[in-house]
Length: 158
Image 1 (cartoon, rainbow, N blue to C red):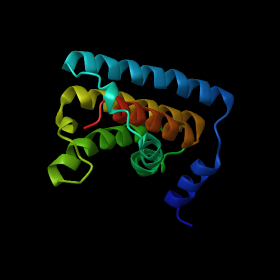
Image 2: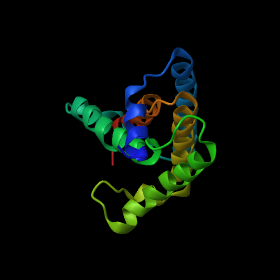
Image 3: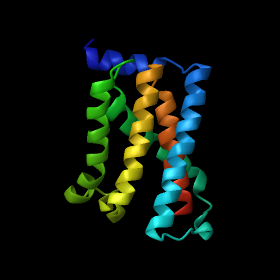
């Protein structure tokens, strides 16, 4: 089995310990705070009426894409302690968002071009990279990524 796939499978098999789970929770709160600062700074209005009957379907689907898929692509190949490669993964993760708009992918949104939104993406990517490199598990980053996307898509649907 090649190293890339073996590392990815090891990250999927490894569950985080209590320390990693607590770190992920603290980082999640940091991501949410940066998202709130973005929303406030960009003048985006909360849309609580957008909470639809299919919210559970949204939550389930966003777990698979983008959360699990993007974490496997951008951080699945990282191993515990790989700090410099984690920086490359972070930069690729941030660049991926506007690239989706440029190449016209179906899930791309115009907001992916906004530097303020990309700063939140960078904080999210940094938090997910930290959890991957420190814990060796992909799951804290997947859950952190998923929670952020669920909050965003539930409260600010586009």
